[in-house]
Length: 279
Image 1 (cartoon, rainbow, N blue to C red):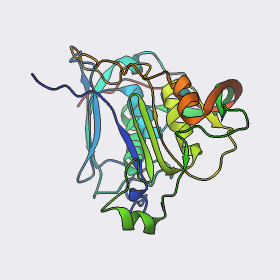
Image 2 (image 1 turned 90 degrees about the vertical axis):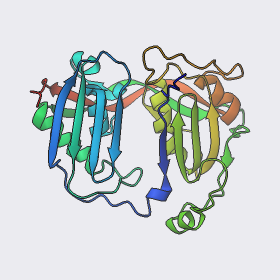
Image 3 (image 1 turned 45 degrees about the horizontal axis):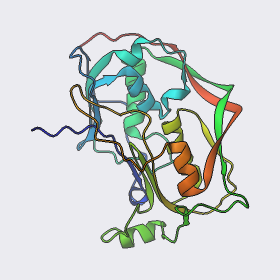
């Protein structure tokens, strides 16, 4: 029986920081844009050697969030069709620019996709700060002590330390963050990095108000709210009977909790966007 892979895993590693340089062109040399009418649910967006990017059956909404590095819950003003209509894009940058360092902002692929969206989809937008619902990540235990799974990191995540351990990294998450359905791992990073991944799970902006400083190691396991990228006909694996919701897992494993609140949040507001002419 053919194995169906549907999980999306995001890996951020400081191993890339030592060599990443945000340089190079910000427009694709060549780009093909075509609507995808296959009716399939699964899509794929990947960078390839030689400065190439290949998007297959991707909703336009996800191309916008990729280009501008903004999560879907911070999009506003978008017409409904950008979440439903899908496109195939094959494009190439000059040279082979490296990925950006984590936290350093959009890289060449993101910037080139921004230009493609403006040119081919006539995207116009602005950013606007609004009062919105959000979560504050706070300590859950009396006295403010971390939970059993939240461990102060002893990893040396300096460029020199990463280079020295690259050949034989320690167990767990090595100097970075890993995300997948039902799992977030952190190694040698501050909690300010974690809240960005956590926001993607709960669909709201999350601000760190734990008061915890320094870098941390942990692996948070929980039941994902919904499957990600599940192809038609594929079945979900049985849920872990010992797993809990992300809200409960935070308290039990890390000694943290999400507190509902409101505050100023910057939204990415789409003023106008059009369907492209296929080529």
